Image (cartoon, rainbow, N blue to C red; front, side, top):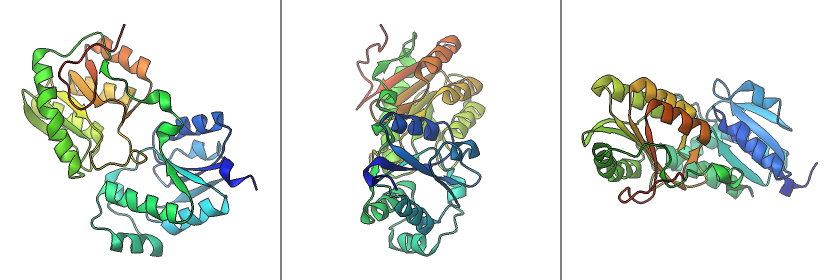
Length: 281
């Protein structure tokens, strides 16, 4: 068995992020073992790991037993787990105890409780950013086009509203048009929220994706990429504001090129959006 300090356990959801975290961990010389969720995780990922186990949502005891057997000293969570499926989980004995102790079943509450269980077993829960620091969303205007005055007004109005909804653990994304909230993310996820806004209001919507104030930087980071831009094109949305520094931007050059081609403005935001300068030379 390799030294525990060299073994990382990757809890993998759907999407490209788990494979990217694996690549980053391997660059650091780590042995990586993984766990995936049935009907969520790409089966091809299992072939790339040093050891693998499949889980159903709610099998916390199996997850912890696997990590301990593999000698993992650190655990990282990466990828999506659809909220609608999470609402129908079937908890094992250990997960049931955790849920009983939790104040509610909101995303962040449950993730923090799971992280606490892992750490009680001697495993440190770490952020995907530890392995992919280059994917932090940069600050400033990232596209050729800056926001129009109307889009900037939507960003200014929407930012604190998105933070308020995030503080209630409702979602990471809202969509506005002319200072009015058109759609807010709940269990359907960001893509469906953007598409719903496009259906409701038509072209010109402004999308805001934030890091929730109650969020743990190690868990469920806001993530966008080419797929987000493709969805915005489909919904005819015109501007994207995403939190800089505390979110992941996958395939940034390709995403920006796609946005430029479609005339979409992308802005990396911090505590607010006033006085934004271009992030491009």
